[in-house]
Length: 349
Image (cartoon, rainbow, N blue to C red; front, side, top):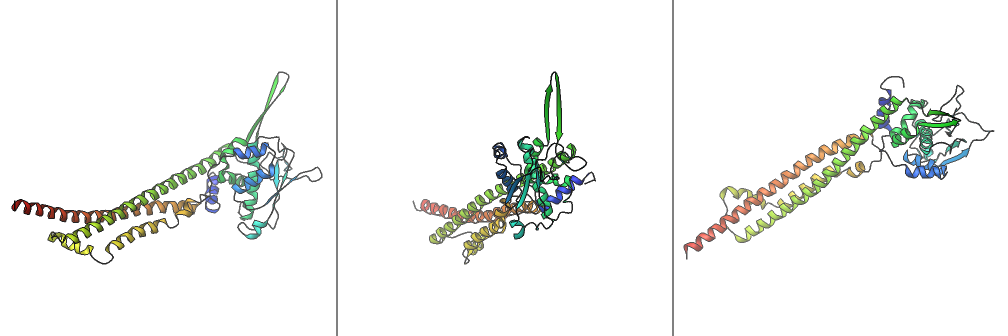
């Protein structure tokens, strides 16, 4: 990640592969951390990242020191300078994501003595970073060994706010009249890179919300329009039945249209046309609306759904306009008959 646009380009690639997720409320995760239920916390973070694996925790000991991939400051030897919080074990033969073998793989996380001594937000960000290594390696991502690239995964998957809160920790110590403040930045992204990444994901997620709301609005409007159209078709059918029973004369100019209304299946065809408009558009709607990740494909499907919904609304309005036109003709024939009856009654008074 050396080019100025590498953050955005990596995120766009992530959107195609793993998708973005909306920001979530992590209050319950903070509660887990404060209750020192670290296993439950790791499992909750893994579930948010769509990792289907069982997770096992073990504590690091003096006899089993570890080098770190962790999102923490490191020295020249690759050891955490502020105390290692957690490290994930990545086997060389890690199965590919999405396979039964991967689902059966147990993710092993080793926790250091620093866990429990840092803010909950920082611990959550570090664990998410560690699990991101598993995700990238299982996807065989070409930049899976890049710490900066790994730092982007939690941001893509809805952790931006928690990472923002936890990536910078400030502590103060007082000795006599002297107060010393230490600010530690966790992670490998610069402040500018982090904000660029967060803004990119936020813009995409905002569009996701907007497009999803537009689709939901169109769904409601189309259902209401289809019901109105069917009611209008039914009204025309009843008007035609009344006209037939009265055996009254109609305008010559209206005759062809009224004859057409007597064609077999005339009203069934119009009701079917309404249903066909809805079917052609509703197919796939549940999948789109229930999507948990905002992938490039979901973005394209939402845009296509909006376009299709707008076309469907136009088609439904045309069908209702046709039915309304039929009703106007039949009502006009009723009006002509009423006036003729009134004329005859007046004539023979």
